[in-house]
Length: 112
Image 1 (cartoon, rainbow, N blue to C red):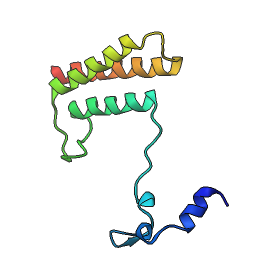
Image 2 (image 1 turned 180 degrees about the vertical axis):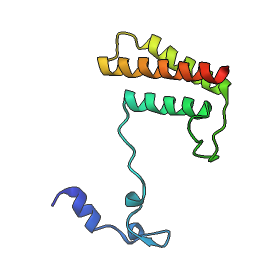
Image 3 (image 1 turned 120 degrees about the vertical axis):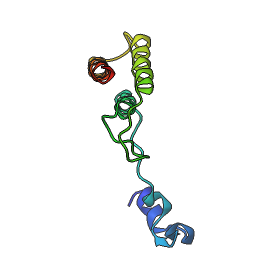
Image 4 (image 1 turned 45 degrees about the horizontal axis):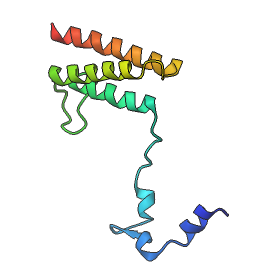
């Protein structure tokens, strides 16, 4: 039995009772993925897609378009590309280039 299993089995009463539910507070909190460049890029791309009205806003549950915000996010991705030039691996470079191209094409289409 490893340390984590022992801790789970010997949890205190406060850990066992959280908001009237049994189980530890740790079990109820979704795991946060490990930070990575691709995850960071993905979050910015998602933000741009929401601003373009391509993806529903998870808070408002609506697909609203804000082209100024979309342009800002696309410009931010371009700055990241410039500032990280020579420091990214091949996959990261391809991810960034592909994302920028796709977002620019969508932005141009929406701007017409």
